[in-house]
Structure formats: structure tokens, C-alpha cells
Image (cartoon, rainbow, N blue to C red; front, side):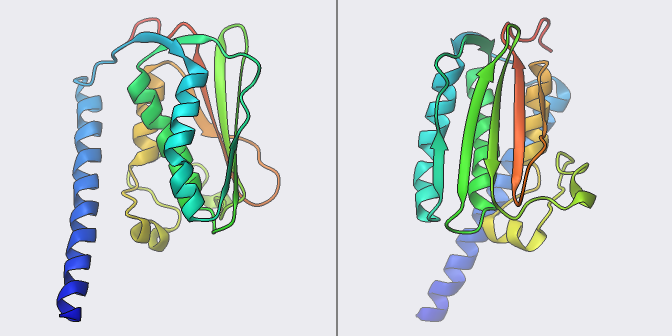
Length: 197
């Protein structure tokens, strides 16, 4: 019976991973084919960050992480596809939770200029080796392949995030980071993409 249950656990885990891969591939193929139109609306950038932070709070707690977001005094309304941008934020914060050893610290900061808003996710996790830094947004690229397999990573999340951000005429990139860990910075135009694809 115990053997049967362990085989069932493996089957369920592998099925979940295959489902994630298929969903990610479908998302990418729709983006590539131009069939994933942005549904633009005006929404509070800060609310989106708070929503995604709350959605990751339980996973962070299960790993013993300290997940903090201290909102600035004000963040503007922005024009964008809220659900897709929240998908980007979920990916970046979710990666920080997954790839930071238990008991780590993940700090989310945000701000704005006259024309742009930005969000940074900073962790004290395993970091990204210099040789991998230029490739983390490539499709199927995984820095820690064994760890990615354990956590069900497909190697597509950051490439999907980059596609969505580029469609908003924004940027997503590694930011300078002191000490162990990683900082990823997302920047978006407040007025949204001037001519969305």
C-alpha cells in the first residue's frame, strides 16, 4: 500500500509539472502569434503589488521567510493589463520564495517617477552566478536545474514575464545587488503601452 501511495504521489507531481509546462507553452505561443491581446484598464499599481504579496504570504510563511512590502506614500494609477502584470509579479515574487533557503528575507519596494512606476523584489537567496545572468530570461533556461525540478519549475516563467512586460513597453531585469541573493526590477510606463500589440 505504501509503495502504491508513493507511486501515486510521483504521478500527481509529474502530472502537475506537465500541466504547468503545457500552460506556459500555450501562453508563450499565444504571445508569439499575437493572439494574446492586452486587456488594458486604469488601476492602482500599489493595489496590484499588495494583492500579489498577500497571495505569496502563505508560501513564504511555510518556508519561514520574512516577506515585507512597505508601500510608499503614494503610487499612481497606471494603464495596463492588470491580470497579466500580476502574473509577472507572481512569477518574480514566487521565484524569490522558492529559491531562497528557508528562513530567508524577501523585500518588495516600489516607487514612481513622472513617467514610470517600478517595483523591486530583493532576496537573500541562492543568487544567480555571473555566467547565468545574461540568460535567466531565455526560454527553458534554469540556473539550478535540480532545484527547479524539485519545485516544478518549467524554465519559462521569466521569459513569459519578459514578453508581457515588453508588450507594456516596460523593462524587467536584474538590478545591482549587494551580498548574497538577487534583485529583480520591473519598470512600466504610467500611461501604458502607446500602441499595444
